[in-house]
Length: 207
Length: 81
Image: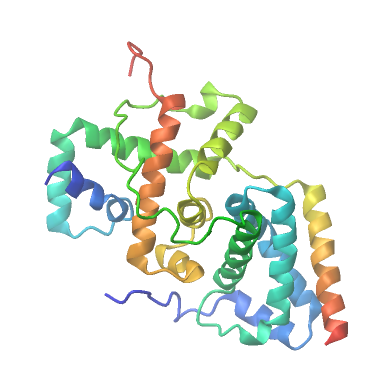
């Protein structure tokens, strides 16, 4: 099995035509691409940096870089994956700047199994949305994902929140498919373990 | 199949990418191991709760501000080029 499969080579994605027009100076075409992906890029940046101001700057810088480097977009990956890759790199650079004494990379903390071995075996109550109000639930989900190492957080964000395929996630992060799968497994298990304290069924509660 | 073997297949299992023979082993394990069944259910709920609740929502106001800033920067870069 190849380490990275090239996705969607048979079908031409509508973005390809927009990128071609943008390269020829069609500002409206580029603006359409910005509209399509600005929310996603902001969310990715915010998830990785956990900082709203950084996420705003990164979103702007990502599109500026993309605009300046449109000629370098090869078209053998999706335009959105290419954008996400720029945003991830910008976000990791921000994290490094913030934590000058600590290296931040996709490889950080991947050696440890801590938190990835299931310990909590209680079933959860079916609908967290009905147990907590929207604000409380948002706080729980934010706090919980903040506790993951950046490498795990990033993989979970791209694969499970932004719905990129495993191959696209690998491409966006410059990782192999097995490396993405390994990080994804640990990220999911760590989040599950931490969320369990909020969502687990209480003793004696009916199924 | 033990629990560690099962966990190593969990990602492929969710993606429906497990070969049939291995899938049969997984199903046998899940039928016998309540802990792993709980892990499957609650891991699935973990993914669903994050998918179903936008943790970092972006307001229309912020989006418009960001959009204008992006386009202003890009147009300035175009003039410089």
